[in-house]
Amino acid sequence: MSRSLVVIFFFFFFFFLLGDPLHLHALPIEKRDASLETTVTDSNRKDPGITTTMDEILQINSADAQQISGGHIIRYGDVADSLMRNAMICPGDGCFWPKASDGFVYVPFTVSPVYSPSEVRAIQRAIADIANSTCVRLVPRTTEVDYLSFQSLDGCWSYFGMTGGKQAVSLKSPTCLLKGVVIHEIIHALGFYHEHNRSDRDKYVNVIWSNVQPGQEDQFSILQTNNLNTKYDYGSIMHYGRYNFAINPSMPTLEPIPNPSVSIGQLSEMSATDILKINRLYGCGECANVVLTAPFQRFNSPNFPSLYPNNANCQWLILGKSKVRLVLLTFTAMNIQLTVNCVADYVRVYDGSSTLAKPLSPRLCGYTAPAPLTSTGPSVLVVFHSDASLQNLGFQISYRLL
Image (cartoon, rainbow, N blue to C red; front, top):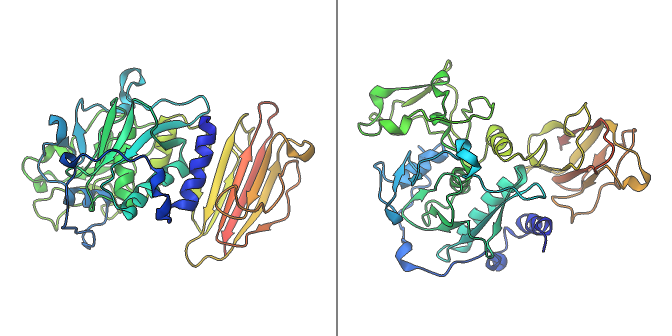
């Protein structure tokens, strides 16, 4: 089966089967190794003091550097120390997961059998979120040598980038099995440090050293990073919380500059800049699968109003929350190569969350904006495709959740 077909299959799988435990056997399950599994009975997930993913992780992991399987050490809260390299500056791109000829980055993975169906679904949701917004695809391992192995070990932690061979991602059951925690650890495995460790950190946050626990100063080290021409991201899912490693837990260890009241950290979702960084690091192109949840927003073809690229394949999934009944789409610009039946370049809109849903329109191309489209439910998928020949200015769409 081609990689493209694998991507299509798993895109459908994540959208339609997340809630069906009967399909959990589709994930690759490792043979049980009792020596690597830990039973956890004390979960503090409902602690009101937890406001970021790192709050959650640090509550589970020991504040002190801890020894883990293989003789390695946990540093920076949840990073397994082997070579302590940053894949973003790794010589020869040796820390990156390879990009396939179809433009996707395939990361094989396996899942330990210790996890319950609901815990496996947390992993699935994290994988789906990354696939929705980037060209990175976590796919079940078949015979690949390099792969991620989700295991219930001794805390929540991961390695940097691709280390080679079977690469553990520890998600201790049940405490680490939250979507935001899983996303955070996967992003480490893709090659990213914590946001507050980036090389330009001191321009954007102050470290209150007088309130940092003795012996934990290296948690706030400035590291050599390639910041990929992105702004410092206070809302990154990779950012430490305001009070992590504090002597006085009512006083911060990190304070934004110049406005100390700016919120920092993220509990369960990637920020727009998290997504941008992954797409830039892995060369995902001008558009990948994007999820839109704002009540009103505009989006457009790559490079609009300049020429869109050849061989583009983009998807925008508009997802309304619980009270949303309908989605209204309005084309505000339309300039796509005109062909019979739009066989070359086109936009197509589906009345649901995948291409299995009923189309709201035929393929659309040409130079006249179509009439507004209204869904029958709270989700719409917009697909744009261009072939290898002519280029045009593209399109712009505004939508509103009703």
